[in-house]
Length: 160
Image 1: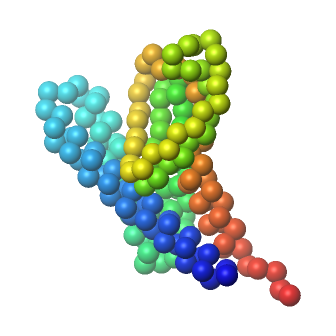
Image 2: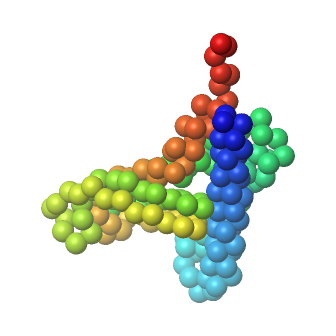
């Protein structure tokens, strides 16, 4: 059973990083190509997230070739875990599949705090400074679970 689980985990990690990262890279590159006339800061942010998506993709490709090299993979998963929304900063990144669980004010009523969840298939990212965003703190559960599971699978099993 452990070998099956490790094979399943490996395939999911590769799909999320290589597939999700490449999708994000392609979509962000398309946005850069179509950004004629946009503000310089917008283009700079697009280039930064193009590089982030490239990093996620390359971390998966390294993992394909050398499964024992996990540091880039850990970084690629870790940068997808926090989803922050506030007036000073909005940040989220999800490659492949995201399941977000969070707490914060409703988009329609600033006074109320809610627990909310959402799922995304594909790659999504957002980064804004000084916006009118509502206060929300969220966790992207999929990369969190994959990161924990990957770390647990690296530990040697106790001798019987």
